Length: 373
Image (cartoon, rainbow, N blue to C red; front, side):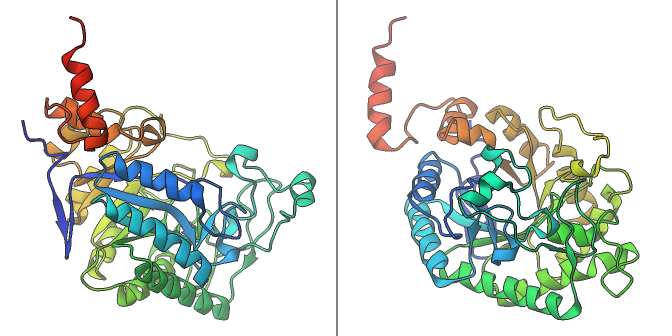
């Protein structure tokens, strides 16, 4: 049986061999923003495992835009060259290389996740990891005890836009075929969108229309320099999942505007505002964010990607068959099983190991043949 999950998907000049996208997941392993052998092996291993697209983790447009000292960056030639090596490896497996660009804003200067993901401490400083000045739309910290961000001035905002433009150009030079702008999870562009973090009274703040202005300007400028023949995606938090935050209706309006400026797909996540001490309304469960992707797809008339606890190949196929989304993003399942996509194909299409790399498939077929009944 042919599945929707393993059917191709075309946008502009790019054809994804199937509908499975590796969700961008930070590894916290870069040194000075430069990718290394960990990233090369990590992303190559996932590409080898049968996904259609591998998306590199959120990659900072500047040093100030990093969330932690371990984040990848794309603001200089050394970083760009290291990423080019990875993009070439991914494409060598017949997989589409994609990259997410981001800026942490007020959620910067933190510890790596496996060091606690708290505020940088004296112990961190002893190894040279000291806090840096962070910025945001307004001088409001994201949590009690967090650094207070400097409110971005007009000249700083102009410089930030140029950093995004330069990062997009570098991403193209590095060989990536899809670019995603990170506008979710409480990071800088999401901060501008949300009334929780954006209390400005100029053209970049105020009502919902003005709060959208800066993210839309960044994305519009990125679209101008990103080649016309290549897709541009945007990840959003469909809801902030916090008191006084953005709603689904806000995101539908934003998504329509994204489509109008040339965005090809909206990657539908949620949240990122738990630090605001608001009680979460979402209960993480199987496919808990899929309805967001469906709502945006239908009401904004734009392709969407569903993400969030999509753990089973059959369920992923059902999402696509039902028209709830056009692609599915798989995250933690790929960390546990880099061959998740190959195993899903075997389950969904009731096929053998013919789609596996021959270096593995021949042996697995032989093992299956001689398995005792």
